[in-house]
Amino acid sequence: MEFRRLGASGFNVPVLSFGAGTFGGRGEFFKAWGGSDAVEARHLVDICLEAGINMFDTADIYSAGGSEEVLGSAIKGRPRDDLILSTKATFRSGSRLNDVGSSRYHLIQAVEKALLRLGTDYIDLFQLHGFDARTPTEEVLSTLDTLVRAGKIRYVGVSNFSGWHLMKSLATAARYGYPRYVANQTFYSLVGRDYEWELMPLALDQGVGAVVWSPLGWGRLTGKIRRGQPLPQVSRLPKTAEFGPPVGEDYLYRVVDAIDKIAAETGKSVPQIALNWLLQRPTVSTVIIGARNEEQLKQNLGAVGWNLTTDQMQRLNVASEVTPAYPYWHQRQFAERNPSPV
Image 1 (cartoon, rainbow, N blue to C red):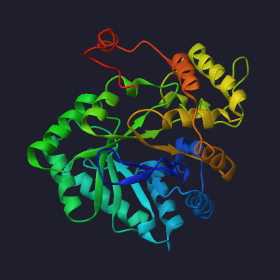
Image 2: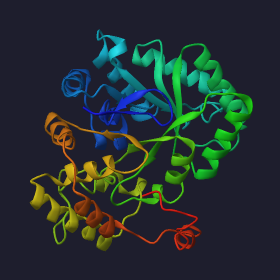
Image 3: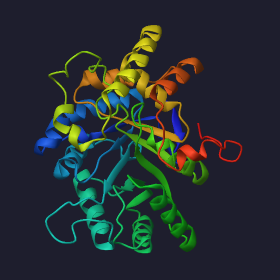
Image 4: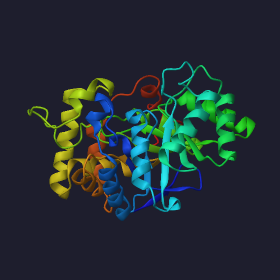
């Protein structure tokens, strides 16, 4: 397994990490993702560790804390220093008024609860799951600074921030000497390349590593969806599509057609090609793979140990290209002073 630095930090992470969102299965939404119990989760963790994947990502809202609990059970008894644990908080996690956001109150509460559910005394990477416009960035970062100094978290990151959210936070960290965000857990795939417009150039400039979530485009690049065929009966997409990014059918089939051709050339599967493409993109530190069972996990593990050719990468780039929103389409016309990050 290849390891890369997490952004501009000195911390190394595997290029593939495991997303534990399929653990727990509480509620209809997360049940559609998966419902691995502690026994099955431990088996999947074993497979990951044997393959060199030692980073596991979760969040407090996944299965209402059930994901963290199951992951905690699955890693119990293993050497803690052999593992990299990543979790997130910001979204509403309870019914009380302050059970949401990035206030000092909620972040301290969220970290303490996550430590209990995971059965550990520190979190390697703690990420804000979304931006909180109601809480001053000084309060957010001073709280994270306190938690880092207390040894409860080691690195900090964000998820689902816009460019100005992230840059404002980095400027605040620089001004007061607070911990800098070194990771951006971001949606990025061959059918979702918005990350490249602003967040990727920012990441290159500021040293923020991409921790990619939903690398298969919200389940659209599993190899089960093809032109002229009905949606597969065994798929979470029909139940969760409304919560994810919209993708036009013509665009999706154009990308899948291009992947299929390269799959025939390489002998690799559609998911393996989609994941390998991501691993060759700028700023990507690690790609989160999920799996409801051993078969899916081993399929995704086949994305490493080889590389698409320059020609194959270019064909995928062309097939998945879309016109970016303003001002990005305008900036692309002036490459001599606004070079493309890719």
